[in-house]
Image (tube, rainbow, N blue to C red; front, side, top):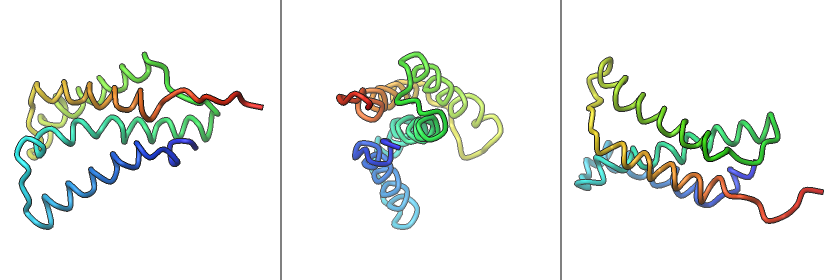
Length: 120
């Protein structure tokens, strides 16, 4: 449940929503941010939801580095390799992989961080 109290997770969600509204409702163009912001924000948001589920159901406080890396790579492959084959709105861009990786690091170090208190 700590995910929903984490300001870094909410920052990613807010930036994603504001960017989508700006693009779609106001036809705002932010150059490179339009191409790379979504790949950067997808891992923190989606892995944050997965962590929330793990905390709620399984009482696991965080994801391991290996779980984070594999899930981030999985998201990148699905969005960059699978979706472009089946959906016209998706385009493959190998640079996106770097931004998925940076988003995975953002998640791991800011959202998935270790707690400093010991459980009672």
